[in-house]
Length: 193
Image 1: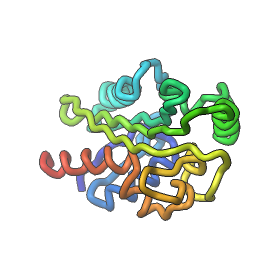
Image 2: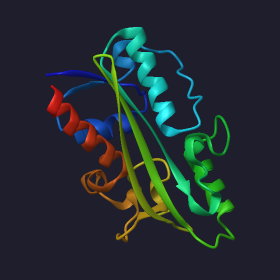
Image 3: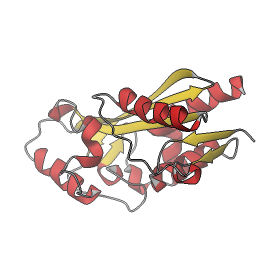
Image 4: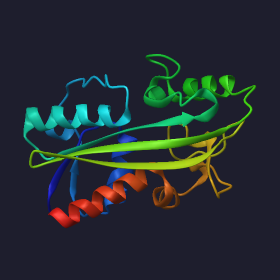
């Protein structure tokens, strides 16, 4: 089975991606290749941050690898929190704090439309490739659901009544931003490997 490094130590993302790739590839995390470096995400785009992480792993360890950067872009907030989604409430704050800050900032919002975006950067035999996924939806005024992670309890995708946090993993993977990007990645890998 082809070995691919997923440049993450986020257990939620790792679990999601392993479920989505359905055993087609052996996906290893940074910890599993003994990479304990703090990789700074200094780009101002999701694509740029994903590429920073993938390049770091490829250059240091020589493995084919991919990385993603994802976040929530809220129309009323001109695309914020964007690349700062994971640290929206500040460094060291958790997702609960991030969600509370978002709800506070949308208190007087005239629109609650938003989108989740994922950019995946793949480095395969020294070549760089990108795959994107976007899903539009609405931000609720209060959390619903226990599944998922991040802003999932606040986000209802267009055409659905459940939040991501109320969906089964299979339901979410089929339509999510990460699901869309990983499906493109998988299709590409199957044509190459």
